[in-house]
Length: 274
Image (tube, rainbow, N blue to C red):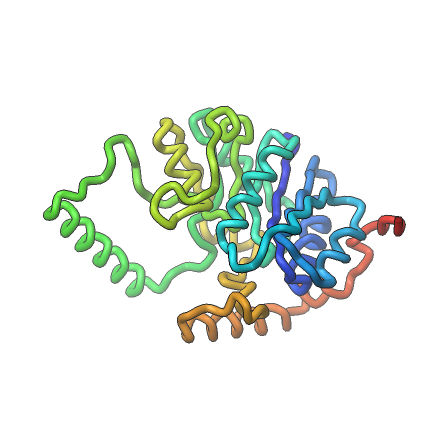
């Protein structure tokens, strides 16, 4: 496989970044992988931990504050893109944990189907209840119909649809750089994977989507994971907050996550203190 750069933004979540990085290291053995961690102004033990790791490239942004979230996540990926040396560039969240070897191969496979495919990933990791999915489709059709009635047409040349979600998505680095694309919000308040995908659509590129079940065998993602452990990012919707907290508690009780939390050998040799 070609060289791959993985970029993970981080802010004061040692509970996540430690098993996240350990899982990458455990399941990427033998692959040509570069890991960038962009720290967005942490002032706790998570930054000390990251500084101690010799196998990652840590980029510190001490001027950042948590109230600038999620913009500083998007700008972190932009910064990582300028530093990346891999042919392919992976955006990743700190609350994503790799479960199996070969996790990068489905992403690479979709990119290499055609030069026109500039991004790969999955739309989500959980199979939706069919009734709930049908409800959402119906609401979407009604909304689209209403917009047409009031003259809100889709911009010419923009193919709206499913796109690789940025919690774990892969891009052709040179294409993003050549066109000076950004993960920042260019379309209302939608940044990250949507922003990049729409910019790619506008330039005629395609998306490569990995089947949900296949990607779910390789990684676990805790949606809104930081909100479950950091009060500063607590969600406004109580039901969504409870769901995130429950998922975190259940996941961290699983043996494979417990094993990552306790296996310090995956940290590798520590940097010597200055």
